[in-house]
Structures are given as structure tokens and as C-alpha cells.
Image (tube, rainbow, N blue to C red; front, side, top):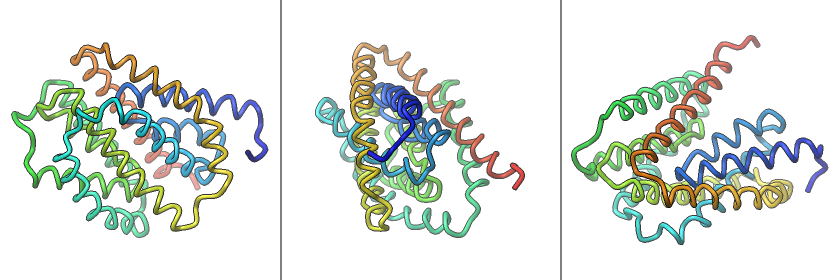
Length: 252
């Protein structure tokens, strides 16, 4: 592993562990939490490919225990929308200022999470068109500013699907999107040996964190789980909004 300050390493391991606990419990949130925390001591170029590798490891670690609970039909339609729309998100990233889009996304997630917290819910599972549209929104968000998770999480939380089905389906879906994202990074030559060594150094903390989070989920009351997921969504939305606002209004 490239030379790194021991205190930076300890701080990074603690951050990855905490984000892993959240990922194991809720099924999402690892990337944004880890990248936001690690960006205080490392550059995005240093950490983003490593975080994608850890995301894949987290999903693969959780997959055997949730395989039978996955809504594969929803995953299929979500992936169709994601694959089709991701290039438009990448185009927006290249041509539209990222800060206002990031801020708008944060506001949307915060409002949607607040509505769900106040009891909003769909009467039945969305059909193919709505599911593909959700996947498209995720693809655009992921391609444009790398936070595509919230639309899918909101999709399952607002549906009548059981919390274990929504969590399992989100994990499976993110496995697909993270694989595509990592392949795209590799094709652009963005992955170096240092990223692999960094991911390997963080892997034990991730595995332990994900295990603890998943163990906590097993005994969780569905209502309590739902409340905690909405809180996590709101925290992620606030972090994203602050990041977008800083980029938009900070002096050059």
C-alpha cells in the first residue's frame, strides 16, 4: 500500500467501519458516507475507485443471506431504466454544472423522505413503466453526480413490499450498478494498484461493520427499521445538499 500517515489510516478504517454498519443494516448508504468522511483526508481520485471495490465486496458479502428475498422482476425493470438513462446522466455531468443538480437532488430526497415519515405509501407495487422510470432516475443521478441510491430506496420504502424484500432488492440492484460503474472506471484507466491495496486495507473493517449491521437487522422491528432508514436518507440528503451548496456558493 502507498505510504500513508498512520493517523489517516486509523481514521479511514473507523470511517469505513461505521459506513459498513449502516450498509449492513439498511442495505445502502456506504458510498456517500464513506466518501464524505474520507474526502477530509484523501482526494476523490484516491478513494472513489477503492470505495466502489468495497461496495462490491459488501454486496457480495450480504448476497447469500438475502437471495430468496430479492424481487428479481423489479430489479430487471430498474436495470433497464438505469442502463438506458446512465449515458444521459454522464452527459449532464460533462455539460451541466454539478452543484445545482446535486443540491436539487438533495432537496428532492429530503422532501420525499419527510413525506414517507409522515405516512405516505403506495397501495400496490409500481408497474413496469414506473419501475423503469425509477431506474432511469437512478441512472441519471448516478451518472451525473454519483448518488443514485436514494431514488431506489424511496421506491421500495413507498411500496407495500416487506422491508426485508426492499432491503434485499436494493442490495442486489446496487451490486449490478456498482459492477457497471467499476467497469466504466477501469475502461477509462482510472483504477491503479494503489486503489486495490487501499481497498484491501479497509476490507476487514468493512466486513466486520457489514456483519454487525446485518446482525442488527435480523432482530429489527419493521417499523423501527423503516424509521432508521428514513433518518439515514435524511442525513445523506443533508450531507449531499451541504456538498452541493458549498460548491455552488463557496468563494473561488
